[in-house]
Image 1: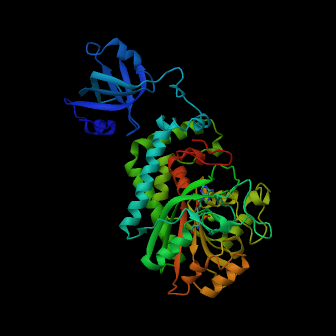
Image 2: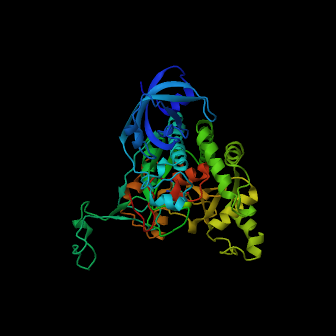
Image 3: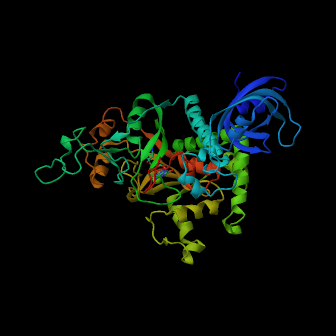
Length: 475
Ligand code: 4AD
Ligand code: MG
């Protein structure tokens, strides 16, 4: 019978015989193999029984090699493990040249590991991150499923720019060297595959709204693409977004949902990823030792997660936030790169981080100026602000962006015209405001920013298996 290493370490079936399969982490004293199969951060100690195994096989046991081993599970004599396997049969199914193997039993920099993304998941750090990432994704589906939300698959190829920021990747099969042209010299997309210009989606929201107008509560969880040239530790060109959309829900309901949802997925991961979070917490403490005191996290990783899961987020209007920022020390002393002097200014990540520190809690900012937010947000009675909300997290800044949607047909049409959005292109979207429109709201959570927060990593490239960033689409 084949058990995972996680099962063996949990069940401790001493006195039984089993087969295990995995990759050699280390091979010590020609006798002790630390075996990993990725099911847990822990390794199983295999003790080689010399009488049963031949020299030739043992020679092939090397760091990185794939092996299948079987033997009796016994209580361990040594320190560091309760149980180990006395190996009576061993097969090296995939050899590895230890001299060439890029992962040596020493500390590698995260930058180096990014260059070997095809192997980095075999390290403790990336194994832990991938398991935590998996659990978070699972908890997302669990949360919505339990609350009668339906998982809606929105398209990846679209003809519309939901956020209106024009940061899209074009999808075309036209001949790049010799594209068909219209009379006025533009590329003639009517000759393209879809007979119109298409792009990779920046958000599933507009389609999710159509789902909510029929199924009441839906969510999307899919890849989204942004061709913004921001080489930061918070941006990816390809990232995963979770976008719930709820009919008959206003901005307050939306804030309640987002807060409850974030607390749920974080608590669930705290409860289920104990070993991985313990490891990541130690890794972070280690990494921060070399940083100046002021740049270190105020709390250990798990305490930080617990804090967010148990305390109320602070809800603050944009106007209030601007007052706080205007009167803040870094603003007065001109330490912000972007000085805040007027109502209407867009907030930069330095401001978002300041606000989170100021309140010492996650912050939900709401009622932003209409001018700095997308066209679909519900206009307030003051006609200056919209019912937008952003959630700001410690060390991350914006993790969620959402709003109540403009449900009034004519106001929405007016907004589209103001923003220069082709209303004919979005006629299907406008139609929902003609046939049974209602108050509705939703938000988008950047999944990698959540994984970044929960894992305590500092660069978003390290929380997705194969990052896509400007100049990088390797693997
Ligand atoms: O604030 P954004 O642009 O909002 C939307 O796309 C809305 N349509 C969501 C909605 O209301 N349904 O993006 C939402 C979140 C951000 O708060 C951020 O966490 C993440 O997506 N995000 C990115 N994550 C990684 N790399 C990028 N380039 C990101 N851009 C946005
Ligand atoms: Mg946003």
